[in-house]
Image (cartoon, rainbow, N blue to C red):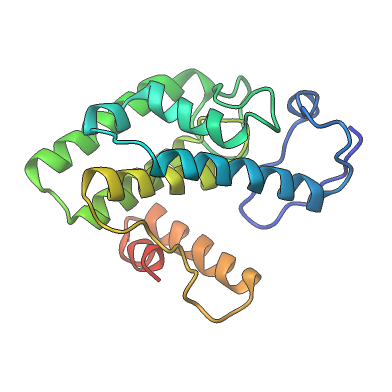
Length: 198
């Protein structure tokens, strides 16, 4: 592996096998990798803004994979493909598909029966999606974009700000986000819903 990466709290390490599928061989630092990934993500976000998705499209395994592929396909060969190894987080690799199908069915139920507010449904979708951790990397960013698509295309409300309104350092905002994820892990979704709109 030509690039030595450091990982912030909550980030999933990329394995050597996964690193072999880096498409831009000139990348040699974490900053360069982050920059190329961000450019790729911006292209994906722009694509979502030009589309008109319905609930059956957004809540499908194919779409979940397509969003990830569009976010990372210029950087990683495995973009849009489910991981084939287990990580320090997420379900066993053999349960990714059935767990995603359960999540999709749950979200459709919540929408149909108005079980939670629209924001809470989208944030619960994001939280469960990142807990499943279907992809080798980029799951947090992917799950946030999926929540944004759900809240904007299905509920017709503005996308989430994900902590952008806090006047604090990136590290402090990230800690607030990770703390909110941990609260959601312990069945208190409110801090994560609040963070999404902050």
